[in-house]
Amino acid sequence: MMIHTPTNLALKRNGIYVRADADDWQYNWPVHTHEGFEIYYFIRGNANYVVGEDIYELLPGDMLLFNGSTIHRVNPQKDVPYLRSYVNFTESFLQGQVPEPMFRKLMSLFDAPSGLLIRWNVEERAEIENVYRSIYQENEREAFGYEIVLRTLLIQLLIKIYRKSKHLIEMLPSQQPSHSQANVRRILQYINQNFTENINLDDLSAALHLNKYYMCHCFKEVTGYTINNYLMSKRIEEAKKLLRTTDEPIGEISEKLGFNTSVHFSRAFKQYAGVSPQNFRKLSSTTT
Image: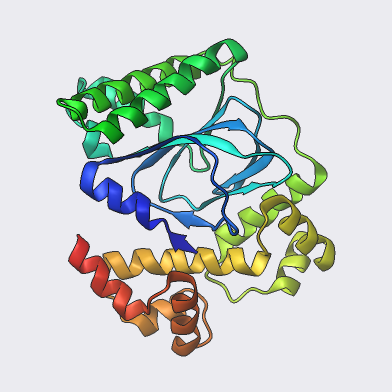
């Protein structure tokens, strides 16, 4: 489990991080979190996106809005180019730019615990894609007054999304999930509700009445991640929150999150986060 550092650094510095028509490929697409909020837009490819406890089988023109602190991971296939745009921003970046009642309505778009899906039709997509390009270009050029232009463009995008979200007929529901996807949702829900328990694959199989080998296969197929890796990612993410926001001893955090020993916790934390729990806490205190 990782925190996406480039996003966080950009958000701390500028309050916004944007990419348009991104087509780069990663060998490993990690489960991750970051600060702020994300407006993700899928242009082309073959991909599933896991946000919280939901799985989105993406179609061109799909947009996902979610809180960056929600665990998420895209699982693109390499058989076709993967093209997407996204903008991340902090609440403070837009605070005070519009009247407070309007601001609260716009921010409510990010309230859904597992993200909000908006489907733009063919006629609307060119306009949405141009907005992302405009935001990206302004951010890159840093010309006179670019901060005001960035905020204006982002608010315009949010208003378009809010208006669209009110047209419920146009917001077509996702296609009926496959049998595998339905089972993966059940697995995600169980893990997210019980990750502090000392659960293993046998426990999960018994609780959900699923064959262990089928369960592991369909989870990896849909998410691109193993169940054990996702479970560990969830625990490490919770550990990071506790390390950032409390003074609880590391031994207590380890026990609270279902680790057998503090040594096991420290080893796993360093493997997933790149630093020890002690160093993570120190680094977090110096950057807040």
